[in-house]
Image 1 (tube, rainbow, N blue to C red):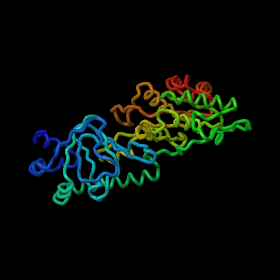
Image 2 (cartoon, rainbow, N blue to C red):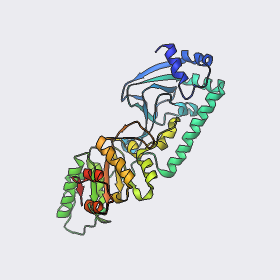
Image 3 (cartoon, rainbow, N blue to C red):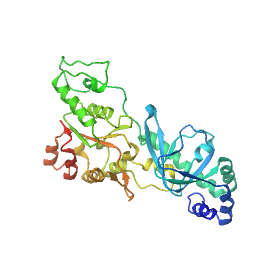
Image 4 (cartoon, rainbow, N blue to C red):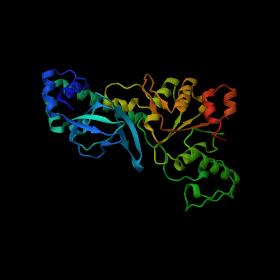
Length: 349
């Protein structure tokens, strides 16, 4: 990349845009340009921190790696954004994995030079402090609300009888074999296991209906564990806990502001749980406006953040649960037609 092109990118960056040209020209020779292919990792959690990064072209996603190798998206950084400063300033290893969403170009500064810039330029120091303060605020917010993606339930195999109202003493389990090889001798349990296997073999949305205590949540988790998303994150959301606006923001996220780490709060569950499973409990209580956005996402396999326009690929598996049948919800106008049409084929009572 030519020096004049590097200069232009610095002029449009969040961190350096208010420096004058003479100050920017001092930085240009210190910049190393790094080309990153789609899907490539810039650094992993635990790597040594020795570089400050700015995104010139493309977009990077911030990944949190949890237990059981489960990886969750906690934010994204686009052109003009930056990352890597926290580990440099704290002298700690990288806390996140950074991966390219598409072919990207990064402008890199050594950790030593970055610290010198912080000392020489008050405006840079203030902007970094603002970014770090925002990240700290989001960290506290996440602790209170659990906004960061995580697997909220155990990944151990659970007996189907643990949560189901089945009292047939003839039911026996082969504890030495998990999941699909389990022997279920009651007709009811066999039907449930067949449904689990059928739904686990597809990625389409599923509706599980039945009265409280009939094991809908456990069936949903078993579908996840036996499906293509088994190694991804899993979450259950009780939609009754949110207003229409709050639920839309929680699921789809909101248009993000310039600070890279504020995106952790503004990234929705459907983004965070990419390649995982999202269970929405009490489908009949989902407001029509949110149902419409969900139906559009299922139809196009993309969605947009609240207030945003850029389409984001839908890569999370959706499972809905309800105490009412699909027919009853339709008759009582508690589900819109566009959404019910996706669930008619793949439902189980």
